[in-house]
Structure formats: structure tokens, C-alpha cells
Image 1 (cartoon, rainbow, N blue to C red):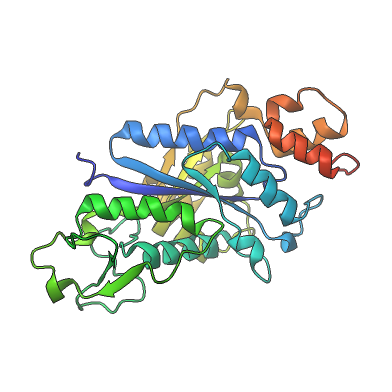
Image 2: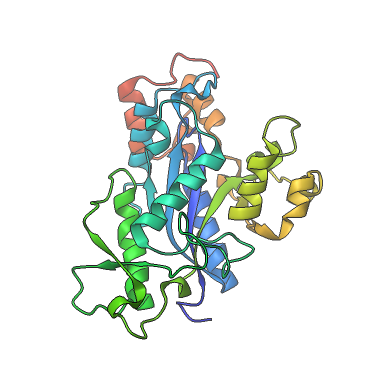
Length: 307
């Protein structure tokens, strides 16, 4: 497959990140490597979306601190960004609504079709009536107006860094009709872009807990978007998927990363990190990056709290 015929992917991870660990970053890296090795995907970006303060989890520190720690954890990454949208809402948002927000935002910014995993060629543009000419967004700074696949991919990559933490300028792209003056230009939907939920096997297993998730949300998350799972603690993902009717139904939309279960990052968690901090355990350096540790100590987080 050529670069332009592969599915271009943005990995989105939701969670408390209380605090963000080396394991979270490892999850992004392993998922990207696995997707690239399949030969079917190109990962063009990663988004970390910390949960809203009203989530109500015991011991959850302020989103102000969690956002800062996340930003410190990815400051050396050239492809993973932190997005505050979820934290800045009036109340807690479902994972489904976060995915839909980023899908809609990416569509507005790039003009690309963000399709579901089952019907990429028939999924209509979000907010665009079917059976009408689909528009594109043209970058007014480019002198050559032909919307080639390479230009559009560059636009997606450039925009990703801007939509995370900073709202993009609305005047950057001009809304134009595809047939107005572009002749036989390549149709922009030839670049297929998807947002996939990135998670550990613990979140996947939570889908099996009765009443915890709305079935309609699960249908959208797994059926429309798709999931990339990085197993933790020797979890049996096959057993987990077979335990849920929705997961069984959309099993083809779940990509399980074949990670080394003995890798030290596979057992790292925020819970272990908080306990290590509370007990003065030197192993905390194995769980958290130094900038995050420094910020925690400076802000006196987790030290005197339980959970």
C-alpha cells in the first residue's frame, strides 16, 4: 500500500492520568509501532484527554495539575499532544462524546472525511447532507490550489499540534466548492482518516461490567470508531472480548497490540505510582518521568492522600 492509500490514524486516550505514567506513554509508542507494522495504517498523531474534575474518582487531583503533568510527560514527543477540552467543559463528558468532539473538530479543521471503521467510502461528511457535492478546505497560503493527498496529509499533521491546547485560527482555511475551479483535482476523501480509542485491557474489561457503560455508547465507540488495546498484567483480551456481546459483535474493530507481557511498563499504573509517592518508594522513578516527579514534589501532590 502507498502512503496515501493507508488509513491515517489519530490515537485518542481518555482517562484520569492521576498521574500520567511512563506506562501511558509506552502505550502510545507500542500502539503506533504495531499499527505501522501491519502495513495498513499510518499514525499521524496522539491525543491525551484527561477526565473532568467532576468525574468523582477518589483521590483525583485538580485538572490543572493533571494537565500540567501530562504536558510535562509529552514535552519531548513530536507526535503526542495534550488536549484540555474535556477538562474545560461544565461537567464530566462520556468517552463517546470526547471521541465525537475530536472527530467533528478534525473534520472542521482539515476538511477530511473522518469515517467509521466499517464503511469508509459511504460515510457522509459530518453535518453535510447526503447526495450533494462535498466541499473541501483549501489552504489559502498554498499557491498551487490542487488539493493533492500530500498537501492534505500535511494539513492534518500541522493542524493536530494546533488543535490540542490551542484552538486553531478560523481564517486559516477558505471554504470552497470542489467543482468551482479545481478541475480534475484529487478528491480529498482519498485520504482516509480515523480516530481510534487507545486504551489498556482494564478499560476493555470494564465494558463487561453490567450497567457501567451505556450500550449505545459502546456501539459508537467500538462500532463506529474502533479501539486499539495494549494489554496489561497478562490480561486475556480474547476472554474479555468474548464476555461482551458488543465486543463480540465488533471484534474486527478491536486491534490488540502484541506487547511483551514481561516488559516493565506493562505493570506500571497510576495507583502504584501514587502508593510509591506516599511511601517514599524509590521505585517511583521507574513509573514516572523526572519532570512529572519534580512537579508532584513541588506541588505536594499525592504525598499525604490515600488512594
